[in-house]
Amino acid sequence: MYFIDTPLNRVDAFDFDLEQGTLGNRRTVVTFPDGNGFPDGMCTDVDGMLWVAMFYGSVILRIDPLSGKIMRTIEMPVSYPTSCWFGGENFDVLYVFRFYIQASKLGDCILKMTGK
Image (cartoon, rainbow, N blue to C red; front, top):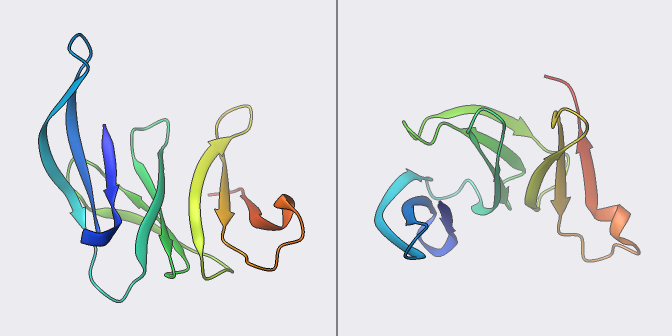
């Protein structure tokens, strides 16, 4: 199980005991440098990689949770991506929710990313 700790600028992982319903073995997956935005929303892809929206950083990062290495950076046309998730028939479409204070409808806040 993964947890974004925005104030500490990092993503942590936990072991989850299904029978007990408890978390344990907290460890840091990745710590982000100051000045590159703040980790906000996150999802995983079919390969088990993490995708992290960097609020005020204008990027979505693909991260290997085993090594903590940033595998890919997608520059966003917006400053405040807040969440991301995969959809489409093959889960190959990345949707990104962005904070937009002047949005008149929800559709103004969702971006659809396709391609490699």
